[in-house]
View 1 (cartoon, rainbow, N blue to C red):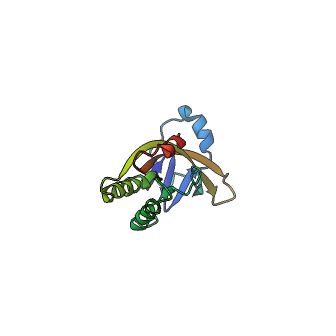
View 2 (cartoon, rainbow, N blue to C red; view 1 turned 30 degrees about the vertical axis):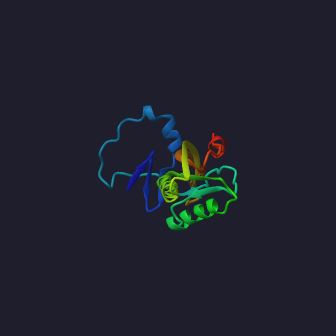
View 3 (tube, rainbow, N blue to C red; view 1 turned 90 degrees about the vertical axis):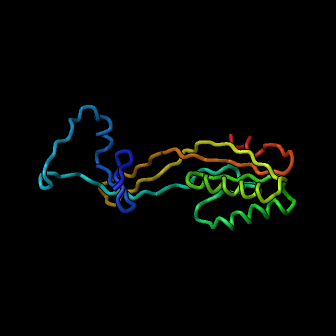
Amino acid sequence: MKAIGGLRLRNAQFLVPGSIRKMAENYAAFPEPKAASASEVEMDKVEYTLRKRLPHKLPRRKNDIYVNMKTDFKAQLVRCQKLLDSGNFSEICIHGLGLAINRAINIALQLEANSFGTLSVAASTSTVELVDDLEPETDDGEPMARTRNNSAIHIKVFRGLAKAKCLQDTH
């Protein structure tokens, strides 16, 4: 079991006390909980299902690549290489969010290493605000939403002295 900001994660569901808003407002007024046997403890729990909304994406251009952890690494690398080899683009922008940051960096470094010095890379980082929906499993609960921050990286892979357009567009 993993605790996240007052929520307890168990089997991909969040268990949240039904009166968590009241508790948050009056947190200082609550005394420390005392130990009690399992038969004495009666908890008011409402089960919630976590629904992660899709992150807000930058404007989608033909030379933007959004890296994820579901697609095969080699397939993403080949896709980037094809865009560069097509001659239509002098630069591509590789975007990675959260866990996919390492993969985005690895793709950019592989492209640079395989180019025999003809490609360069430039990177910038940012923080993206994500929204999650907590949907109640029962009729007793109230739907809630929470926001969280996640790291992102934007890597420009370019030939020669191309302008840093994709890095300027991310800020």
